[in-house]
Image 1 (cartoon, rainbow, N blue to C red):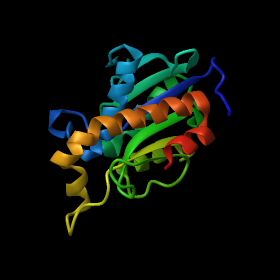
Image 2: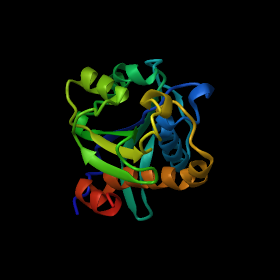
Image 3: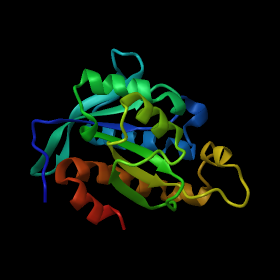
Image 4: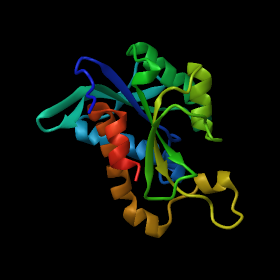
Length: 200
């Protein structure tokens, strides 16, 4: 098991679209996970001085096993423009891409399933595309939270910008909790251990 040195700073960012119109959409599950991590820190999001994101700082970890310093962030921009705000946060906190964790929705994974990985393409995800463009690399960690594929012939854009179904909403708190656990595990225990636990 590889543990992260306690002196390092990590940036964990949840992707979504700002405002009440988008709050319940599948595309916003990254925001929901970020909110759960903020709750675990016992703090509240506040505006970062860049004006383009909300953040909270603290330490995540398990009892007796404190994790590293972490900044939880939620960009205030729309999904296709998140790269700039996240790059600004990474620059401000001096966080390299290998200490960046991005939590986002994933079409190619069934709902109620998640995968954790380092690097990769954007797979058509506009938030990841924007971030790769701003950072100049895709070599950051991803907590990929499955939302499944649209049913029938529904357009993908319409699907991700629609609310979870009634059945999904019942399971959603458990999905969010599990994804937050995966993000914490990644920071405390490293990638290999986290993949063994969560990439089921």
